[in-house]
Image (cartoon, rainbow, N blue to C red):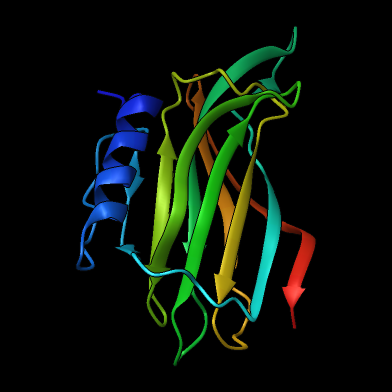
Length: 175
C-alpha cells in the first residue's frame, strides 16, 4: 500500500499542529522508515545543505539493453555525535525533472548518530533512469555533514545487482 501525497501532507499537518513532539511511524513500502521527531517550533538554522541524490529506478542490462527494475532506498544518516539535525524537505523527481512526490515537508529532527530512510519499490518506475531526490537539512549549530545516499537493488535472471549513489551538495547554509 502506498501513501498518497495528500495523505502524507495531511499527516504532516496534523503532526505540525500538535503541541508536543511526536514520532511518525510510516513503514509501508514506498513510505518512510522513519526515526524522525516532528518539530513544532521554527528552526534557527545556522548550518544546512540542499543535496541532490541520484536514483536509478531502472538500469539497462544485457543484450538489447532491456530495462531492469531497481528498488531504491534513500538513506539519511546524522553523523554528528552530539547534535540533532532537521530534515526539512525530501522531494522525488523523475528523469525529466518533474516532481513526482513530496515525501517530507516541515522540520523533522534526526538525533545524534540516528538514521532514517525512504523506500521506493522496484515496481515504482515513475522516476526512470534519471530520477533523483532533493533533500534539505538544517541544524541550529555547526554539525558534521550527514551521509545521504541511495542504495539500489535489483535482479535480472539469476544475477543480482546492488550499488550506492552518494548525494552531491547543491547549496550550503551557514557554515
